[in-house]
Amino acid sequence: MIDLVQIKQKIQQTFSPVSLDIVDESHQHAGHSGAIPGQITHLRINICSELFSDINTIKQHRLVNQCLQEEFEQGLHALSLKTYTVKQWTGLNNG
Image: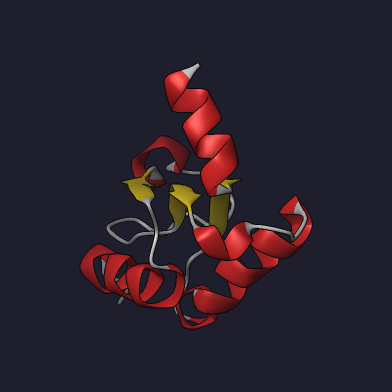
């Protein structure tokens, strides 16, 4: 079964994020494709990491998807991602 604490730990270990926000949106998808009652199937993740510097958004998203491959195999159906470099994050939060 998918565990948010384990997901957070895995992402923190892999990306050492400056900022990380994980929201379970599974309840918003009840009755839709991929939704499994009582399980985490849909997540929204906002993450800022120095590791995203000098790589494009598609590659950033692929890295996060690869990190969570085990969760996808366990029933995670959808992942809404917002990835930021430190420069982007600083601009958003100081501008």
